[in-house]
Length: 482
Image 1 (tube, rainbow, N blue to C red):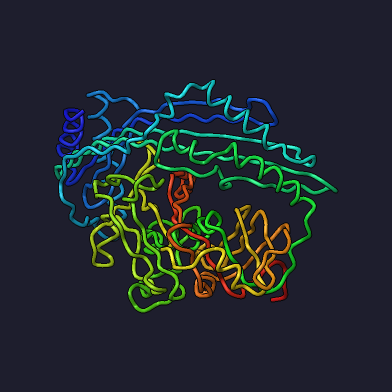
Image 2: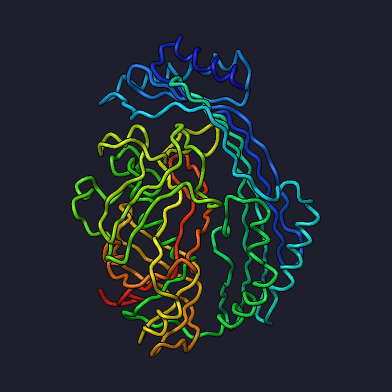
């Protein structure tokens, strides 16, 4: 592989590139699901190819191929350079890259149990057992359990002298119970919606999720939820579970701190950002003093962790919000100079045939010094919200509405009743500014989201968010007058 990468880089140089890097990637995936007591899906696949990125005449060019052959490498290198030169005809400024130290390294996520080595029959048998336990009440109409495994072997090499081999394994899953009664359907799931909870681990992560134990609770609560009262409207104190807070953090912090959005070089799918450059290190209040946020791709086992990004920049931690003040972005080698910095290693692509974009790693809310129980006892009139169902947010990541599966009403420091169809609406800095309590390390967990979308064509990647339950004061709930 070293010989092939060197051939690609030299071929790009001969064609006129002033910089080139190559990624050779082999992807593997497996998805298994059961539904209503039957096997629903068994799928697996592999993908292998390379992508070559170059700078020529001060502009980017990119080309890729699934054929890792000498003649094809030369053809793709020449094509990438020709694309760069065509792009240069309309350039406004020349591409400048922040420096990075050349490295020769190997990195492996080291799963304890290879998920692909566990027999398919064993995994399906496990899912069928889980599915049976989800039928915990007569109102249950549909049950589903699923697991997914993803593996990636990646080689990166550049004309600056780096050669990096990485191997990553990610595993996750979810369970769902749908209940119906009186013309209405309600869902309870675990541990998270939108594909479940993922980690940079092997099959041991599925064992840690303990689906067999949680399934009975999920089925029971789904039956209770469909008969619960509607969540009332008004302003209430909200205590938000870590699972749902991960999605809130993802949408209202993770996307707006991607510096390519801020600079306007990426606006597809989810828009730009309200966190413009004038707010950077200017004292801008993103949230209250209880809110500190960081991005860290070095957390062991976290879904957004890695050894190096797709520009050969090492994994690292970056402070994003410090006691409520906005202080940092996610950057690439090209975008970082705009704020006088070097890249913090947030450039990733979904596969060999896609160009890297600035992406989230593990964007986390720092733990506080409360417990969930203390927050509940300290709340006079509020709601405890759990697990995401839907959301809407504008193209600057500013105004939003979120819905959760369930709410538990809190009165005078005690949980009183279950409520259905809770929604809340706010504005990002107002919402995070209302946070006055965050639970501590014992209740803090990194949640893994398997399908963060960005770009056109869309590139779904896997990211992580560390959160603990947190309280937000007087948030608008349900439908109200504006």
